[in-house]
View 1 (tube, rainbow, N blue to C red):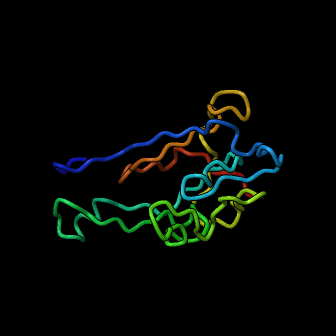
View 2: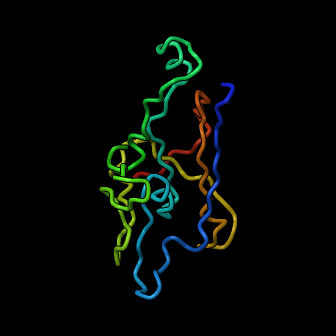
Length: 154
């Protein structure tokens, strides 16, 4: 972060096992969900939701040391950001919770309104942790026009 005393965290995640594999001991699939988990749907399509334009927000909010973001990944997630709020710090109950369910399918990416594009290919055997890499971080005003192939229509 460029603001003294503030920190930015960039994350890179990989599951410990195939997230779409059968759950022991039932042998049924519980597809991951939540704001990060739904990225592991295995369809090879990335969906880009609403993103803030930090320069515009900074100007609109007076040019101070901090900005309040507005985008909540609309279009890339099922529902809205508020659908993922939990009642307390250790809560597991939210609109799309998969906690303690016996079986649950992957999200229906065709219902998402964000820009669909082919996910960046990764290496490794199908189902291995290295084929499920997902990164999360800020890209701010970095435009990627023309750098991504559009996803095939479904």
